[in-house]
Image (cartoon, rainbow, N blue to C red):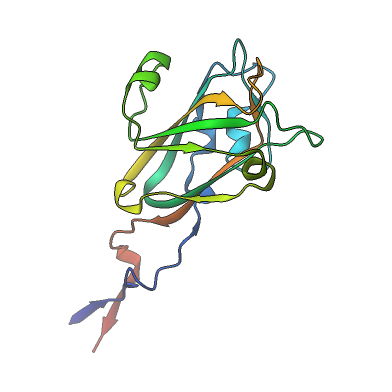
Length: 175
């Protein structure tokens, strides 16, 4: 008996919204206002606010390894974006960072978002080669647009593709 495996080549695999690969129930946030749900921002338009100051650390686990090409952050409250994220640092596979670590460590990427970026949820390209084999993404929001005491965001979406292994159910008998 001969078996053949039908695998999509990497060039034809669809890249897209990775939200369905995020384990929303296991999203952890440091310095979150207790009235907001961290997992809500990765599965649609939710709300996450900081508690004691403007900084927030969000640890986002994926259900399988992914490759990330870009990210979009959306934050708007009745036209107000002063409390929306401005400086955002991304750390690949570093889920145990505290605020001192996040301030001092070299991020995998650093973004400076404009008011227009966060209002429209503009997709920001990342250096694709640095975001291979991502299991967790730690997002450190260092500052907000208007130097407000509280930061808020409605959504963060990563774009890319899962790293798929051989799925045994895709083996087909031939001959």
